[in-house]
Length: 138
Image (cartoon, rainbow, N blue to C red; front, side):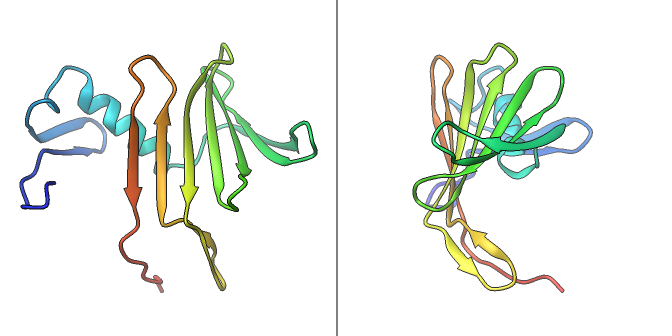
């Protein structure tokens, strides 16, 4: 959505993808599917078997392997926020999802103000999600 309130892209994904609105350049073939996959990657936990270990240098890491097409490394980065690196089965880095501007919330944990997905594929791009408000659910 633009600052004027004009919706550039709107879609819903449940069992299938339903595109409500897509104006150029957001109407290109494959854009909606890719965008929804990116949003799922940002907000959904990685599926598969999780193992803990250490990177060289003794930094703790949780590695999730789905047994088919990708693995995910989850770790705390240098700014104190969580980062997820998603790799293809070939070992090629698919994307990184980095939390920034993290705050500790008592009883909850570390909450990032921004989540930034950076594609590492050809034609790479960045998708930034900004937290606007936090409400504790009872």
